[in-house]
Image 1 (cartoon, protein in one colour):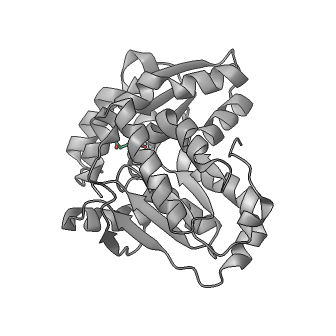
Image 2 (tube, rainbow, N blue to C red):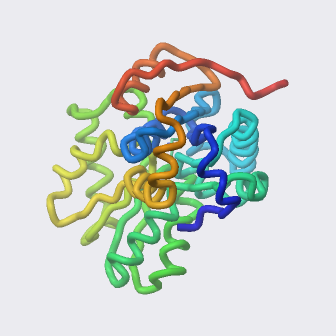
Length: 278
Ligand code: DGL
């Protein structure tokens, strides 16, 4: 795992783990971390004012990510988790530079790359994600550096995140969109498929049904949470006996509030804070 290492005592501090995404998809990562580290407080920021990041310029994504990292640090985050594949592939480096070792920074791509390099060094794997994630080829480059013989097939699936945000899953519409994407010839013969967007765990079972048992689905939320548990384990659990979670978005709507519950798996109280224009 390539989190930027920092002072060991950051793990014992009582601050929350700061998590951010372009919207509310990153709540799947927050939920996985909550399940693995139940004693730890979380501060979640969803940049709903600017989502989807998948269609934004790289400069815009870097700018938003740094601004959010600043906000999380100001609110005493003891670690920063980039819970968005798009921001992870484009802005990890600049966020790490900005944070400059004050707290560890994690992204959702590195644990998946490690896992694929271990399990499929000579295999054929697919990665689906936003246009921006696919354009940067961050997964393909990361895997090539550790498992040069692994054949990585990347496919942009831009309709999936808005479809899920709008509550379209487990129905005819989502099934036909998924069927169309998953039958793309690029993905023919893959042994594993990376869910390269933090929205996708919500359609995991639909994908599994369409792909069948021969294709392993790799979920970045689960893999990252497992890494955090390994690194933060008992110390983090003891740090805060009664965790306090905060969920902040840059643009509040009732529909986000409703969908947030689905992504986090339990009730979420969303508040709005604008980080822009002041
Ligand atoms: N959750 C974002 C990701 O993991 C995708 C949504 C967006 O385009 O903003 O890439």
